Image (tube, rainbow, N blue to C red):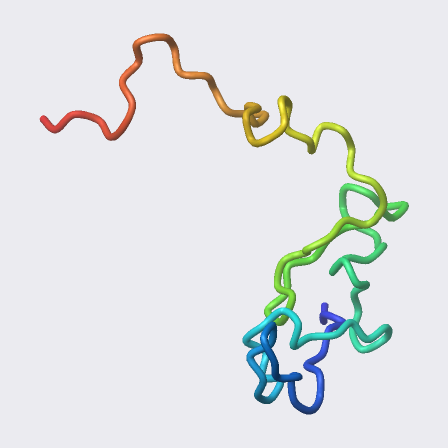
Length: 110
């Protein structure tokens, strides 16, 4: 599946907030979403049939061209994607808490 992003043509504006020079793909701002340019939407996803969802479902795609990984969500993410406590203080799902007194860092050398 092909991303629908393409490299902008021309030169970046130059100034205090811009490096100037030709659009060459080094910066995220060098790319623009072009509907119909590829197979995927602006979130690098699409609706299609999968083995798990024979009636069809929306899914994200990792590509070998910009943006490689999805950088935005289609729709509204479920609350389970949010961290509890804000500011990164929450514990991610699937991670275990270290028991009181358990050693941190690499295992001791033997």
